[in-house]
Amino acid sequence: MSDIVLIIATSILLLPGLLGVFLPMLPGIPFMFVIALIYAVVTKFAVLSGTEISYLAGLMFLSLLIDFLSGLLGAKIGGASGKSLLIGIVGLLIGTVLLPPFGGILGMFLGVVAGEIYFFGKTKTAVKAATGSVIGSLSGMAINLLVGLAFVVLFLLFTIK
Image 1 (cartoon, rainbow, N blue to C red):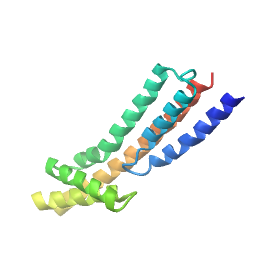
Image 2 (image 1 turned 180 degrees about the vertical axis):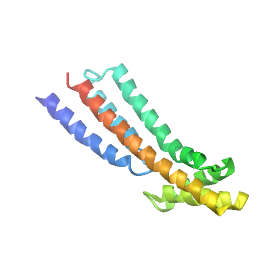
Image 3 (image 1 turned 90 degrees about the horizontal axis):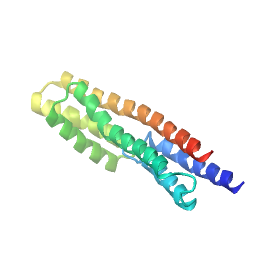
């Protein structure tokens, strides 16, 4: 009976990680991985094997890649130059620090716009590229939500045997 209670409690603790998916630059799925790892330690790895932990770790690393690359990929598809992408990264970092939780998206947008206008002087292209960064970031959040749900489902499949 206590095993079920521990699984339910751990599953509930995973849920804030799903919310973290919607807050750019916050480690929602890495948070979930830490919770799963704590569960494994508490149960002395009797329930979650090393292989199962590695699957969950793989999902965590996939989510980090999606988090950091989706906005940049969207901007690149939108036509942003490499220089503007670098300025977009700076904007993302500054926006995240100054205006959490969504300042990162705004900072990336403004950074890409500023870079494109400064280097190429084309406002229309700048807005298109920056819009691509926002669409990419939002798409990344949606994909990460699916990765997070897969994480929860796998955790439950691994623990309820």
